[in-house]
Image (cartoon, rainbow, N blue to C red):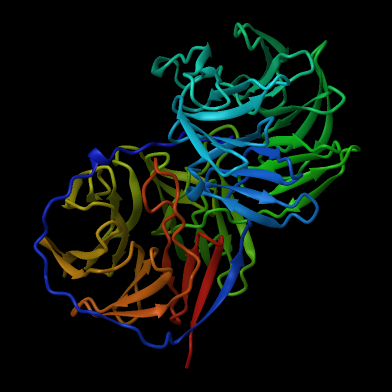
Length: 559
């Protein structure tokens, strides 16, 4: 279950205007001059959502953040295969296996359902925004439902050819935030569809023919995220707080079956031997629960989509490395890689917004979230919000510059400055995909991920009437930083490298290559996806996020 509302973007919101270009230098590749090591190694899966077991006995893990279905060995936990964009997979939130062995999935951000047949044929059908839970009835009927974008329930032709049959109509925009929406459902031995209603903290039974609904279990201690029946017809439910319960459908009572510490449970499935598997959406872990309720980790968790970086004063008073990790903001010791603390989205609302970039902001940090359409100033030491701004148009990045907040706004293709008094000024416009921002005391630069150009917006404290083209020909430039010598460091997400730009001549050199970054996300999201970023320590050490491998690299200068 993707628990937060995603924002789908319209290309029409991005208007390309003309800047006055200046000459830029060519690229020269030199020996790196840095030793590259992995400082932090995250999870093998970019957030674990829906689960299913295929006809080969392999565990299928849908990963909406990873834009792929991970095929996992049920015994070792090793990822055997990743089914991604090449197979039509876009943002899979749930997965199921049909009677003929076909793999089906729901693409939540684009509202489609996909099918990968045993012969490799891919079929997709558009149903409605927010396609999320998916399940087959014992007789082979296919059902899907909306979540976070609506609350409809639909029966589909398993061949994805005939039009969907509406079982429960979507209540539309007027129904937001759709408290009756369904999630991770399963069919019971009685032929009825059982589903959690997370916002109601209850489980319901639905007649798949009429849509008639009755309550099975109410007032659960935490929102349920999925339900599953075992081979004996017993009903289990996962709760968002890490609890797995066994439900007695008759009186609606339940018993705690397993408790997984510090987990955010998303979905469940049983294999053919009665073994239960449970997914964690926030850290990418997959857990194996025995028949006695004992838990062991099958796939370890950790970073799931590292984006922005901030090297600043941490919660211990020393310099720390903060990482934007979608549902969390972990803090690491930059020299040992040890996890110091972690701030999260609150289960009951609040906490950090969905974090896609982070930067120092005085004694605090500033988080930009295109997903939540928010810019948040956050105090890590107090674990509390200082300020929240929701009137920027799809903020991709945000930094502090000359005491002001500066935001790269994708929705308007612009760089916007906001003063402490709340006055907004457009510093630059006409960008296709404004991404990385970098600044000295008096100079400001922005990268355009789509055009491969870097522009200077402010020079010596003066906003340039016509931003100056500093460099071009870069491959999907994203995060940027200013090095100790005044040169610009830029992450070329499309090339898996960090490059250096001389801002005076535009000359580009390669700092480090062969980095696993530049993950391609959903087609309904910014092309930056996770904003691959770079920061510089006082001794010249560089830190870079690798979203493909879920790692943080440390690049140490060689003598």
